[in-house]
Image (cartoon, rainbow, N blue to C red):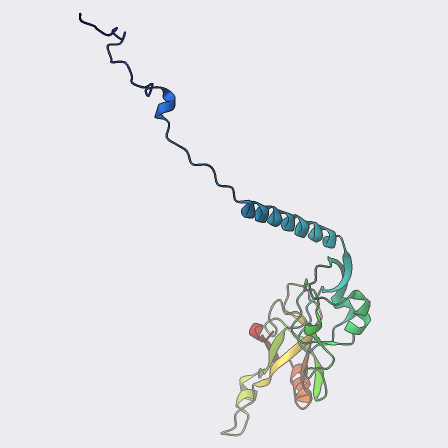
Length: 234
């Protein structure tokens, strides 16, 4: 007697041992490895960041009074009361001069050129100055257009030049003599009479050596003085 198997509807042989199901085709997946140390580190960093941000916000709310420069003061120049202003800043550990010492600041000199908007620190001031100290003199000059640079302000450094008013004066010296045209190589400007005017004429006061001051004043009275700005000397 011939025994035949029952045909499968799709014409394929029957699967053996039930290995043709979907579950039989899935690859084994290794168990996921947990790293508690990394998770703990991540939580720790988040907490540290939150704490730092909180402290920054808290300290930002602590305001202190400091000294701010509101007008340029040249190096070696006495700091005037008009050049400083009280300003409220956040106490975040930055260096500053407290406003309660403002009366002492007015008795000090600028160690470097102080620019408007600068927060004053102890390193920017000094108790003495060789620029306007002994051996120096302040000379007032009445200058015209062409004798002073446009935009000159207090605190600038200039050269004081002797400019003969005529060719006769320039050649009236003895043969072989060299006229001294640079009277002061670096003179500090302590005052500009008309700082807001666009014109280059006006009154200018400069600090020069006391030995040359009478000569500068003499030439200035006859209009034979000119100033040259030295921006790199600030």
